[in-house]
Image (tube, rainbow, N blue to C red; front, side, top):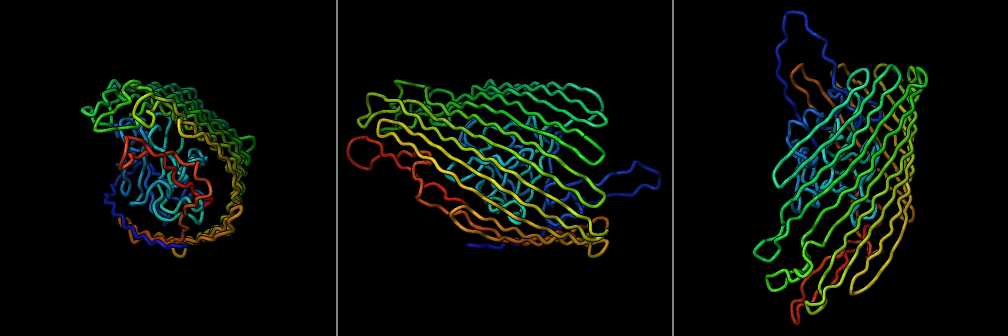
Length: 467
């Protein structure tokens, strides 16, 4: 099924031009809106950015809560820091938002809906975030129906070697700290960040119902980025991260207004092990720029604890594990035909695998699967007049076992004068759909039986088929 979205945004910016000489102000460059980096004022898509200083001023530890301060974004979580959380972009949920960290797609391939959980990601190793609103499927694929959130890790800001240490303390015995090493030279740049967060948290459930333990959270994250100019035209680089997080969660079973699993309090936990790495090479010619990259992403989720049996007694252990991987390669190129026309083009190939094991007192199941996605995309940007830029883009994706689909987008930026910019975009996108082909890939949901003894019925939502 194909939908079309149209958005128009008018931005007003007032300013005074002093009569005396002043420093030259460089135009902000946006790297995610078009295939080639483009001045923000020449981009037709609605773009919002947050710098490291903006994130610091937000006062928020979770990145999602900081981003919610931008127009069109809202953040919701299910409890204290570390609990499951999601962003909505213009009202659409996370399943329609493409999330990239240094070019790595970090959505969970093993989730029922392939999306990113913002509950455990902080701001310590983030230097910049770009948010594209509106359908971006013509460049990024079907997962970008609502838009794209592109996250850039820390980068060196000044020549030489520098060190940065940050420490914070807050309510619920929350402590966070980070250390960043940076090195910037004539031909190289390196940045490494180590971050740690601990919080005692609070109970997301009602204390009066017997759920009195706090839901704590611990997280460790290590990230790096590096780039080296081999020659004047060839740059190679790499980036990566390792992230471990553990969240205490509330007991699953409430019977007659009380949490009867109190015989094993505070033993239910959710653990995340996530890691990713990317390497790239860029050739910068006078008119032709080309980038080839390969990345791999691994996401492992484990939820374990103790639950009651059918009759509300004799607790038994359970464990649900969901592992997903994504390996992808991409080629992007842009060619300056002349001063008014730029062509962009590229191709991608990605393979996603997923594996799950669930074991509890009712049953034990395993499931696995894989899917391949191949994509071709192209773009043309025209400077119709010195004040008007128009971008046309199209993409075709082919999914293993499900055929192909084509999406398109048109966007325009019209600078009416020095204080008024009009942006408009229209794009097509493909709805995700649900299939019952892999029912065990979903996180189980418990509900109480309407009649009879206080038993619990295991329901497994169907898993999402390839997009």
